[in-house]
Image 1 (cartoon, one colour):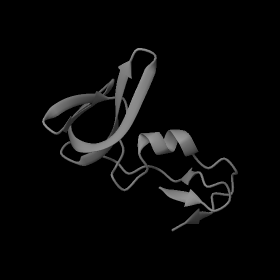
Image 2: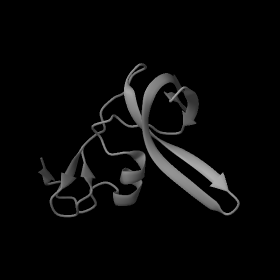
Image 3: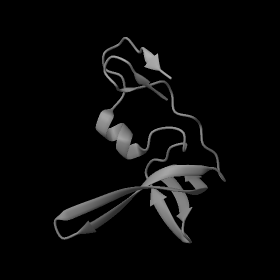
Length: 92
C-alpha cells in the first residue's frame, strides 16, 4: 500500500499473506482500566475463519488481523485510515 499525496491515507490493496510468511500483528495487554497495544512481527502459523495464529518469540498469539511486513501495521492503518479524498494520488 502507498500513501495518498493529498490526504496521506493509504491507497491500494494490502498484499496477500500465506502460512509461513512473516506478518505484522498487534499484541493487546489489558490491566485494570488501561490497554497497551504493541505492533510486532511474527510467523503466520494458521489462518482461521475468526482470525489468525501467529508465533512470536516462542508464544502463539491469536490475532484478528495481520499485515504483510511491507504494508502498514494494523495500528498504523487504524490511526491514519485509507484514502478519503477520492483522488488516490499515491506517492512512492
